[in-house]
Image (cartoon, rainbow, N blue to C red):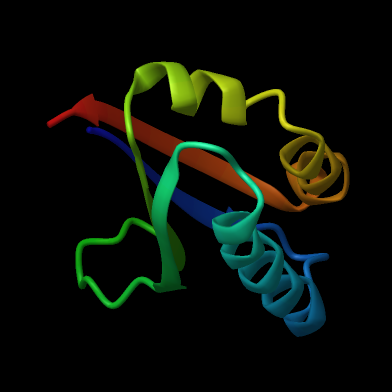
Length: 95
């Protein structure tokens, strides 16, 4: 199993609609990305969140599936509009 964890610090120009769209679009990967077992997103409630207010966790069957996800058309479409609005952090590991 391969775990992908991410967090976003939203830039000032990000709207509440952008944030809702990101959550919706990321959860939608569940039914379209081969090897994606599950995906969860939500607000970061940690008092040590360092400004990362949006977090997610994706579970893949293996690293190869996670690598394929990075070039999946849905992921690329998300990145196109989302990257200008965030300061992201990513953590990955095999479990």
